[in-house]
Length: 449
Image (cartoon, rainbow, N blue to C red; front, top):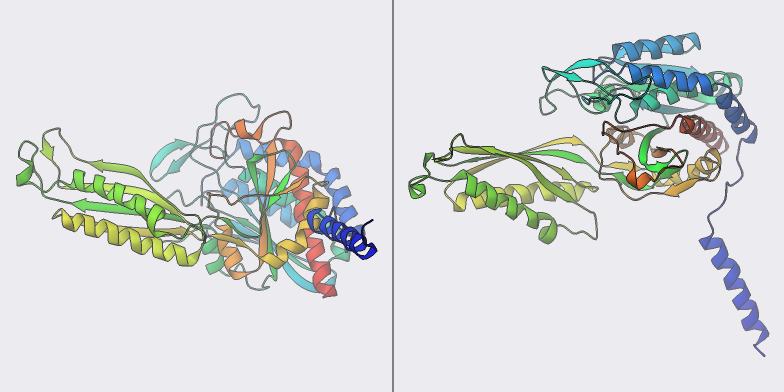
């Protein structure tokens, strides 16, 4: 027979193991009454929510041109009795809801801009809109779901405004332009846009938020499922530009020229070692991609210059800086060895998006309740998001909401930015419940701390 103490220890270990490996299923809410109100009010306005989303989808606008969308948002927020400010960062809208009870400040953000993508026919509310993108006439489509984000936050504002007398604190609603970048000037110019422009114009002041939350719809998850990740969740995005200058000459006498085409090819191959041999992948995944190469005018002329561009993705500030240095060193030294010259420019567009560990841990059970238990911890994303700039200033959480109909396989669904990207409207109410629920729970939790 086994020793009784050993049997007790074994049984205890099983109990402990069960506690450690079982996900806490919808831990008890600090504010069950408020969460139930959120759920009830969200259900009551679901039809209105879907109508908003479809209207915005049918009338998309590019970054910093979102005048119709901003007008729709501002009118709705004003009718709710909120203090509304328009024209922030050119076309952004900010509104403040003051609860009847004292407490902290929570900021919620939605982006409003669309993409220069042509939408195929099929939906009764498909876009036929046109716009100007960097001086060109383009078709415009909400191919990344910002129409859903805007409609969801409009609904959250209505839900929370209806609970004003019970809110212990203040909620700031941020409707942001140009998350995808500006459409009227190049992203590499000296201007700033989107989240950075709103921060510069004081969106995180008067009042200053204690926490910030946002969501993004994704074709990577089934409809209504919420995905989140503590720490680094989205990559930084840097634009890489390399200009290689040689000496033009006859292609039949290449020794009389300095060939920038061959040199550029060697640089592309050399840059592969930045990730494979120079970056500590135990610390952070990294991507360096050269995506364009342009040079030359005729088959028998060695050109003077070749220009390349690409992208750099990292999740760690230290790794990011080292990768930039490695790219410059490799490019310049390879060019010098060929008697050519390489000029390297790195334009930092978006920072890594890093969710706050404590806020994420506190809000994970809230998200689970909002999604009726359908939650998942996601892998890092190679995409970038300028919500990262808000998180650099204020602790918070950015999470994903699945929008692929449940009878379809997310792995085969059209990705974000595809002309075939499709939002299942049934997921929208889950997004409303989630954003409103994390808000009331954060306000209540801060009051109890």
